[in-house]
Length: 263
Image (tube, rainbow, N blue to C red; front, side):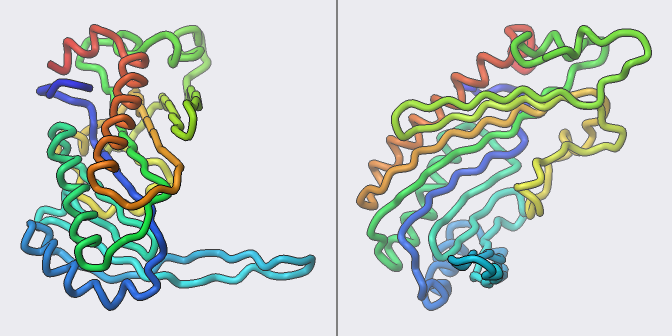
């Protein structure tokens, strides 16, 4: 995942930074929206997210709380930001390479920080979704490492594969890495998304709208949980480390043949 691939399998990337809660975020949205509009994200929508609060003590019923949520998308609706009271994320379905993605994420954070200074960050994360779909005449197992194919190639006779899932969670200090491969047969066209990412607010590029049949989703997530003073330059360094973790994991899950097909 280090070099730009002509037929790169990545179809969705998400970067997120959680920071100190801004209860008055609504007051700062007009200034943030104006700056992001000028930066190329004019599509603005205001919404809410539902947060379930569990009261302490037996017999207490949980309550639902509505929290403000603001999205700022580009005109094509292929990239944009989501701002909440305690965090900001940047996501795209039109990924090029990591450098412009990182620059966009840091730009959004810098705009928020300049509008209402942030005190600390406490969790940062990056998540990649890749669709591994074999070319005509190829088999999926030519693209995937045997470590993630499970029993897919061993099934014979009348038994058909419904779904195969491989998941490995690892950590190094406060940094986590989740490596997941999901293999299944899809009748309808259009690449799938994990349920927790729904609803998807971005348009999927044409190439991934046509995916169907047997394919794999490689879902890789790396994060750092650590409260630290808010500093853009430090966040940049840490995000690069998370990207390296994802690249390392991805390279272990695909074959040299797959990389040659994507060049």
